[in-house]
Length: 75
Image (cartoon, rainbow, N blue to C red):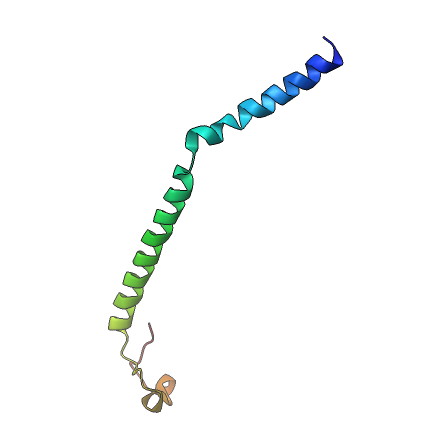
């Protein structure tokens, strides 16, 4: 085995290892984007549920001293 054969074997190994990306193509990126949209939907739905359970007023004027009152809870 000559030096040239060794270099070509290493190059062929790299070409073979990156062949995986030809197989996957852009599907992994699409999967990540869809996962992000699902995560955002889940997060917003959870925030809506927690906001509905909170009994602290949204208005700034009415929020003064809310932490001193009993039975008040944040989201």
